[in-house]
Length: 151
Picture 1 (cartoon, rainbow, N blue to C red):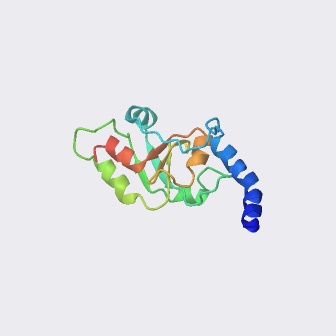
Picture 2 (picture 1 turned 30 degrees about the vertical axis):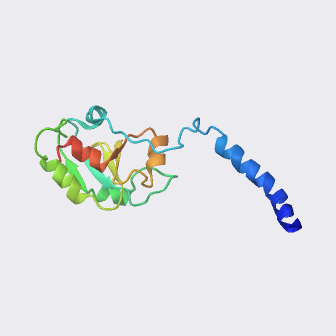
Picture 3 (picture 1 turned 180 degrees about the vertical axis):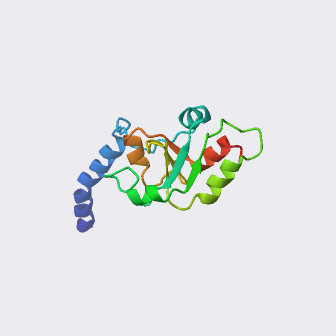
């Protein structure tokens, strides 16, 4: 019985610390959660009528959030004159092309001048989202982009 009381006394500071941490407000951490762009109108604003180059982000490093030279030499897809929102029609060809060409890696959506316009991911917790958020690059889920394209 004496050992149990000693153990409980030793655990009190730890329990108190856990309680304080769990009750503290972490909402002022700017990057506490992944920020994804789900508004189709904003996606349209970023991409509509632009010539796009889609490049896989195979080297997902937080230090250097730009496509490498080798990644730029092997674009996944090139899209000329990206279309407007198309939710009521059937799936546009570009939507089918994006779906077919998307592998496991996130994709940089680049302008012809290699400026990063958006970051396309398959999962909402993909590597690179925090870096994109820090660089104020819109992050778009593949499902949302396909919805935008009527797929």
